[in-house]
Amino acid sequence: MTEIVSIANQKGGVGKTTTAINLAVALASFDFETLLIDLDPQGNATSGLGIEVKKGVNTIYDAISENVEPKDAIYQTSVEWLDIMPTDHNLAGAEIELVSEFSRESVLKRTIDKIKDMYKFIIIDCPPSLGLLTINALNASDSIITPVQCEYYAMEGLTYFTTTVDKIRQALNPKLKIDGAVVTMFDSRINLANQVLEEIRKFYGEKLYNTVIPRNIRLAESPSFGQPIFIYDPSSRGAKAYKNFAIEFISRRGVNPEDYKKSEISVTDEAAIE
Image (cartoon, rainbow, N blue to C red; front, side):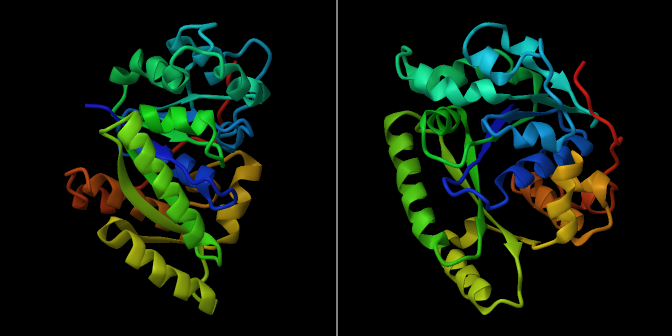
């Protein structure tokens, strides 16, 4: 059965796209059929996998606008078992166009319903906002993972975000659940970071992932080379952390983590859409 997971936080710069990319790559490398949907108009998940959207390439915008069938906006990446619905600058205008759409909060859900049976996991990289695109993603999803950076305003944003999620659950999507939060860009040398981590633990309780993603130069560099961390520097602390996060993710879904702890994440080094 397919699980649709939104990686979402209304605050930008918290490692949301990095988390979406590397979770999707890890799941695919564990032989789960996985689709990554780039729903952020900035297109960082697309470029972060080394994909250049050229003229004539179909995107998630074309799919939700019903210009093409959803299956025709799906492309295979360099990672076996991982496909992507890329995006480009056209998606920036989608929220304005959606305002006049019938059942505008369900456009993405109708799109995904046509192709979801092809995959075990569908990962949605949401925009850093709570606009119509994010509402569409949450309405289409089974669960949400929130990347959180340990900084001063983190808790204020989380409270607002979870309130919004509760409203969407009540009004649109009763099955939606908060899978949990993952702490990103963590630097244990900073006292404030440790204090905020404790507050996040109190806020999320058992739903907080045990894996903490460290602040890591190699992890920060990898998107500029169009590579997931597992290609750019598979021996880095960032790569090891995201592998552990993915293992923890699947173990929450009843998969034996021991089957994956010793496995190597191996992918090729090129991705392109022709």
